[in-house]
Image (tube, rainbow, N blue to C red; front, side, top):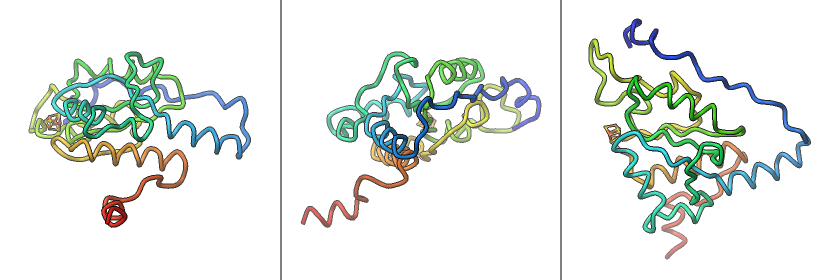
Length: 181
Ligand code: SF4
């Protein structure tokens, strides 16, 4: 990214959080399993990848099966931010504000090539696009593709759950096919 382009982006979001009130390992472990199985994504899309994100919540892919069906209309009620789409420089401060309004603990998925690195909009001297959401807020899981399919987003959700609890909760697609036979 050109230096002048980078200089115009707001500094990294404020990521400081308070210590938990109860900080005992067994309690945190149980809380993290509860959090992992009830992640609430924010209703928030930036471009075409958001259409795939909508499929993820609807009947065919049905994220409700994995505890993440309640797309919340406010960052104050969410704990999972799916950045789905191209981040224009005009939208970047608003993405940072949404991140800061989301209460901790919170997790971020960068969905699609635009959110990861600017995608097909990166070219010499471009000035309108942020070349990766991790330039403005911290990211936990990256899902490549243009756009990624809803199954890819499901896998991203599983990876957030794994990050929270230290284990994978759902079978890999190959294992699921074998167990169906
Ligand atoms: S990665 Fe592709 S599908 Fe997703 S927002 Fe960018 S151009 Fe659209």
